[in-house]
Length: 132
Image 1 (tube, rainbow, N blue to C red):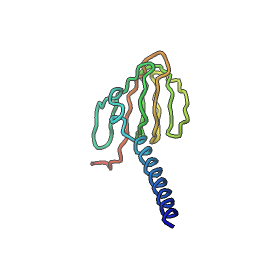
Image 2 (cartoon, rainbow, N blue to C red):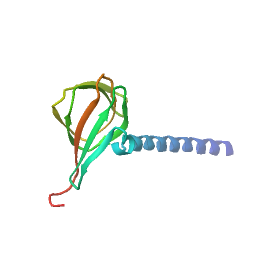
Image 3 (cartoon, one colour):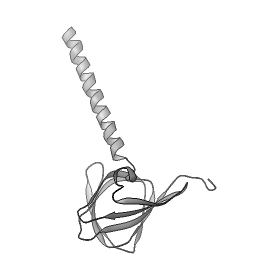
Image 4 (tube, rainbow, N blue to C red):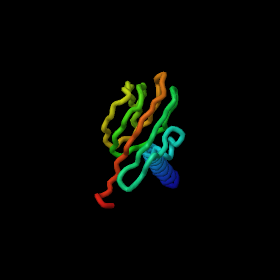
């Protein structure tokens, strides 16, 4: 019987380890862009209602997996980027400078796969009631 208890304990430990590793991966994938992408992003303004970011990613540059709340993005120039979601799926986006887009909350990584610098101003919305 001691062998059976040891085997069961090992299975439980393996499951607990796998669950902990999965939770850690989710936590890493949901990091704030300023925690993982401070070399490509800068805060222009922040208050209780919004955070305004400027982003610059050189050709071949990457921004690791991170999250944004709902936001508006204004693209400053043409670019080509690959957007990767936590499940590993990716899509290539051709960005047109001078356009704006609305995005719901998102977790992603970004890679500049074009030949021009990717530049944007991003306005993240916070959940603050008016007057706060």
